[in-house]
Amino acid sequence: MFIYNTDDKDRKKVNPDKLRHGVQEFESDNEKELLYMFLAKYVRKTHADSEIKRELKNNEGMSFLDLITPSDIAFVICVVKNARHVWDQTIRKIGLGEPLGDGETEAKVQPIFTKGTGKKKEQGRSLWSDEGMKYFKRAEKVWKKVYKDKTMMVDLYRGFDKWLNIYGRQMIVSKNSSKSLFLVVGSNVDCKG
Image (cartoon, rainbow, N blue to C red):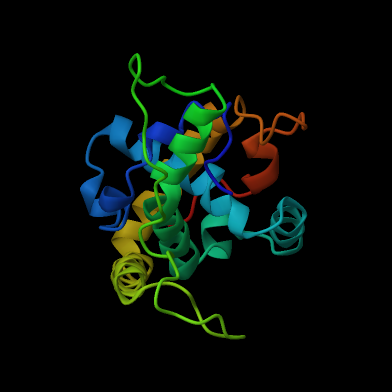
């Protein structure tokens, strides 16, 4: 889904356990760049690129960070936490990831939160485990606090806009596109604050 792209060199840098604690965990410039990359590359996928461009064009002064929500951020963090090891195994099996040692085999791994064991599929009912729902709720609560904190948000807007202007112009959204992240999530406003 999100990080199951074998060409994605950044996928191993995403640390869901660190991301779920909000911006406070990202102190150095390099760490903050990973946060901005995560928001632009992965949280962006919760909305269609055409929707993002339309909303930013039609709402002067709006930033991509205004479009995504704490819930979007928490959801992507949980999806990565839940399935990263499954994606890594699949990539290894098709011969594109880090190989196992000679004669080594590995058992099929399961997602952490969505095994579905002990739950009957019912319309409108989640197959996420209670542990997965708690993980999501904690991450969402932290990110809601970030979004409500004016100082943190001003720093996030400024840092994200700076990162997007420097690195987002060089990152292509997919291998089937020529659009950069900047063209999709960039707005006509430099920074808020």
